[in-house]
Structure formats: structure tokens, C-alpha cells
Length: 488
RNA sequence: GGUUCGUUGGCCGAGUGGCUAGGCACCGGUCUGCAAAACCGAUUACGGCGGUUCGAAUCCGCCACGAACCUCCA
Image (cartoon, rainbow, N blue to C red; front, side):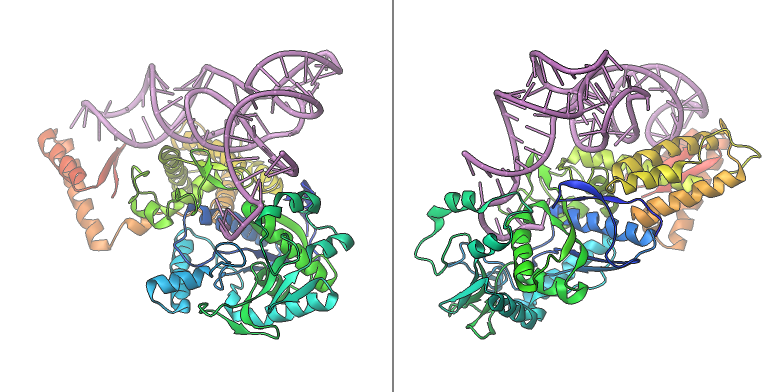
């Protein structure tokens, strides 16, 4: 595989050259959503970030197996010993079957991902469908001696693990500090240490989601599903594991420990983490109550939004920042993205109609290499976009007749735009979809042709009337040199 | 308190030692019956104080401010 892709590995905190474990195959696991509520802007970030990784690896010629899980067993909501399963809680509130809640939100999540043009993962396993695998994983860790049973529950022995391996290497923590800082949370727990975490929890009677296991009727611990499902579908060692930065500790740290303890080896070669979306400099999140659902963006129905925003605008907005930076949401920032995207996509459409000359006066070659270089540098989509805007200027100049482009260069330019805009960045035009059916389109064209005639007869009263009325109905009328354009 | 990471022009956001992204807004211009749209062009920056260097937004040190994680969180 001829490429020079470097990705930032959280483990080493450095950009490392991407070399897959198995020549032309890549295994990638990404932490998906917990389905007890609608997806908000924050959920779009990892989905889009790793969609880009998925698309780019495929573009490079790899056969990628992309696994993104659905967490439907539920992490505990409060402290380990008194908590209630999120899904179960929601189910009780809504008087629904737990799996009914799960199905409802899974469907809605899929719909949101689809309009964001996020490709389907290769496998989307649900935690509830992999209880056996998780029980087996617990057994492996017990057999290896890194877990202990206590009152029907099984806990991971962090201190023992740390003596042999190194607990905290992903997040840069050390166990002494953690023992100090979390001591006070420890009551008369079944756990030996506050930093130990549950692999299997015995269900209390009010728990509605529970399964039979050798230790008790209960449910698997918070971090286990990713260890079990990741290794089931990608093998004991695989290339990439992704997720949000907020999952780095404890979730991914525990996952590393579980795999090393249970399998005797590190499973993941490259750990990738996308940064958070902030709002007024603060993380957008459920607990802070400052999140905006994706649905609300698409409908504009939220007090912080001045208008609705299309899925592509949301996607473009996210891609305009590097995935490891925070990106600050505001309605005006999205408006800026919306305008930029629309100009870019109109230029892309214009490119298809461009006429070539015998020679080029604009510089177009090198664009592909520059865009590839940006992608190879830890998937720097904002830089790719900036190059596309540079090329857009050239396109417009040619369109205006101020510059020329040769047939060869034109073919190449079209190809580069298609590759990067559609295939890699996953942006698509939203114009065509909203244009409606043929009869309706023809009717509007008829009206505007009548207006054109009126204009030619200098009948400004008629021409303005048509324009103003259509505008009032919600149409946008644009006059061009020799005709008109419209959209709604 | 510990760990990790930030602070870039009016706003959003790239950039890791010299060539000083990009988008949006603003301003000037082209086009237009008018308007809108579109297009072209120009301007504005690197939290503070020291240091290293011929040269620093970029490296080092200190300070200030902010954020994430340490409980579930994308």
C-alpha cells in the first residue's frame, strides 16, 4: 500500500505512521452511542470523524472492517453500588420494554446518521446481544487472576494489574494519585479498592435487565462490551480504536486493562480520540443540559438557534475544525459554515459546466497531492477544505472568462473535486433533493420565463410582481447574465 | 488537588522556526432597469513576561486565564 498516512496515537501522544497489522486489511472499532436519548451535536462528532477515517482508508485501497457498537445494556447512572441502568430507568419512566426504548432510539440514531451522510459501519453489534461473550471475557480475567468475586459481583483488581502491567498509560494517570483522590467515595463497598471497577454486577430485584451468569443473575460491567465485541469481530489484536476524548478515562483505560489481563496482550495499536464540541467554551453534554439535538438543528426548533441548519451544514461545520480540537458551537458559526458550503457546492456544480481552452492560465495541478498531504497529516480536513476554496477561486475565474483551463487540467480538477468533496469528505449537494417534482419545476420555470419576457419589454411592474410574489412564497430568485436560477 | 490540553485578527478556525491557511462578517469594485444573488480585490492576529536563535505565533522557562477528565457522558 503506497501511502504516507500519519495518525495521532493517544497512547504515544505523537503522530505515528499508519502501518496496519495485516497488509491490506484494517480493523477499526469505535464507541457508539448509548441509546437512551436522541443524538445531539456531540454524537455527530465521532460519527463524522471516524466516517472520515473509514472513507479515507478505503480511498487508500484498504479493506476496512469498521465496527461501531450500540450500547443498550446501559452504564450505571450513579455510583456503582446504587446505580440504575440507564436503559432500564428510561424504560420504567416511559412504561416501555427496555428493548422497545433501545429500538426506538437506534432507529432515530440511524436516521440522523443517514442524513449526515455517515456511512454504515461494517458491523454494528449491540451489547445486549453479546452477553455470552462478555461472561466469557469475565471468566478469562478471573482465570488470569486479575479479578475477584464479591457478593455475586466480579471486580477488576486494578492494584494487582498495575503491579504487573501499567494501569493508566493511556490517560497518563498513576494509581497512587487515584487512590488518594477517590478515597472518600469508598463506603462499605464490595470492592477492595475504590479504583476497582465492575466486570459483572449482581442485579438488585428492581433491575429489569439481567442475565444468568456463574456468579449471579446480573449484568455486565460498563467497560466490558467493547473488549468482548471488539475482539470478537476484529480479533485479539486490531488496528484502530476510536471514540470521544471523554471516554479516554476511565472507559478506554479499563478496556486496555481488561484486554491485557484477559488476553495477555494489548489489543489496540492506534488509539484515536476526537475532541468535544463546546458551547460558550463549555462542553456540550447531557449532564450540563446545554446540548442541542440533531433534530433541533434540522428543524431550527431551539432557543439558541436563529434558523434551521441542514445536515450537510452540520457535517461541514464539524469538518472545518480538526478532529482533535474543540469546536465551539454558535448559531453564527453555523451560518458562516452554511454560506461557505453553499458557495463551495455551487462552485462544484459550476465546475461540471466549465469549458476548456487549449492552455491553462490557472494553476490546478498539485491540488490532489496537496489535499492528500493534508489528509495524511492526521486527517486535516480543514486544510483540505481551504485548498478546495483556493481552487474554487480558479474555477470562478475561468467561469468569468478571466482565466483559462486546458482540457486535461479540467478533467483532473473535476476528478479531484469529486474524490475529495464526495468520497472523502462525504459532502453532497442538497439542492437537487429539494427541487421537487418535474411539473412543479416546469411551472416555476414558466413563470420566470414570463418574467424574463417582461424584463425584455422593460415591463418592470410585471417582472417585479412575479419576483416579489415568488419571494414571498419562499422562493429565492437569482438573476443571471442570460436567464435565472431559483431554489426554495 | 492530580492528569491532559488549550489561549491566533470582529467571529469561527488552520498552522510547529523564515515563504505570514481558509470560511463568515466588514470595506472597495464588477455585473444589474432596480434589488438580490454571484464574482473579483483589500484590510486586521498570534494571552503576558523573559530566554534560545541571524530569525519565533511556532522551541524553552515562568506567570495569567480557560477547558476536559478524575461519577455517566461522544
